[in-house]
Length: 343
Image (cartoon, rainbow, N blue to C red; front, side, top):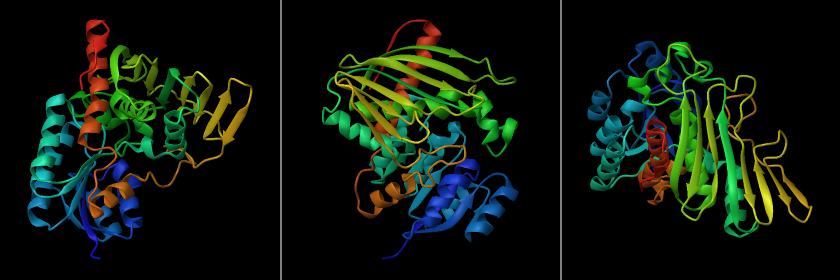
């Protein structure tokens, strides 16, 4: 079987630590081209992965015979570059958030449909062992009716992670669109939809820029969410958790409580109302800190979806629904009212 020919557009940290590494480790993939506007950066990536270097994604798409593209660019470029790649006949894996508006997300989905190509959004939280196990337990009724939840994703900020540090596009509204909500919050919106197996109907949000200087994007956000069946809970996204990253989720049910990534040893702990406690030692969650899982499984799933011609777990429609939660939260903060979530 011939290998999938892949290009990675954008060679910043997410490409360096996730996409390029995981493509390299997949036996069904050949990395043929990389692209970045920073010439030194793209040449380094090209040398490391024996790929051709480009500083123009348009030139790459016009010149190379490729099967799939990873879009690892600032948020405002996600939609235009993904659409261009889809129209050029490539399957696309786009980083989150998939777009900066409902309209852009819809255009991406339409481009994938019109060109009969896969579109996947890189929400890696669905592939974490504890999360897949929890989804199964909830679906099987292990904790009975779900009443509430709380989830948080916070760390000290992208300056310790991004290739440009404090000068990163993450802090520039015209490039990032949103801050901690787009970096972290949309991951948890997607995770909650996945765990609960249903959509959210309403959100009330408080959004602040209080922890970072010289930025016009949010660095702290807290949402109150209500699902269509009446499950209520909170979601927090923050770049102000300076001492230690928090990537935890707790689901409160009729027969028990599921604690996810809330303990240093056990990925999942279930406390039952009858007094029993079950601890699950599972693979580590993906983290920017030491000790996170080495494979997000996002790349492997994307490749498998192409080779087996099946719909990715997080396709364009799924990515759009998770984005809708964030867009509605922005509207809630702006109007100071509870906002309905579209989709």
